[in-house]
Length: 192
Figure 1: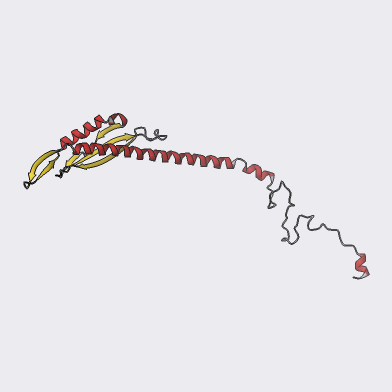
Figure 2: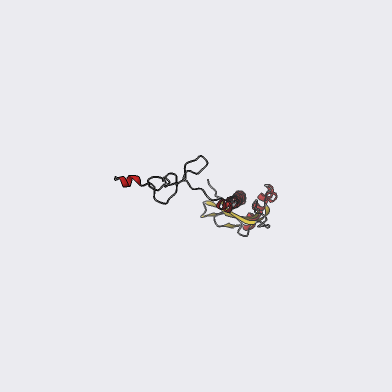
């Protein structure tokens, strides 16, 4: 260095660290010093940005809560309908067994085996009697023996039951209820 260069004073500028620039960082990008109250990545939102976003998370949470409640109500209604159908199916099975036991022994076929003979009116009467004895009309809303209740060849009794089920929570949407139907078959067989 020459004496002229030594005599000249360099202009005073702030160091990179006092300007908020990190040594070795990209030029023009400011990093904030690490303080306990500041975020780790050095981004501090302005006050107006904080006020603009205030309350939006509450709306999001309320939306998710409403969606979760609707989903829970739908699952409860579907489960209730499934259980009501299973109860009605169990009742139809019992009625079909009672109807299958109302057989008459028919003529001998080929002179060796007695045949089982079922009639439609006996099947209907036996199914109605079973339902009356089991107090099914009290436990199911608008329970009735369906049109498909009949006897089939070979000593088979078919019982169709219909009832109205009322799902919980959403019953105000379907005030008349939902019609459920169960069909069961039973066969009588004579053995030696």
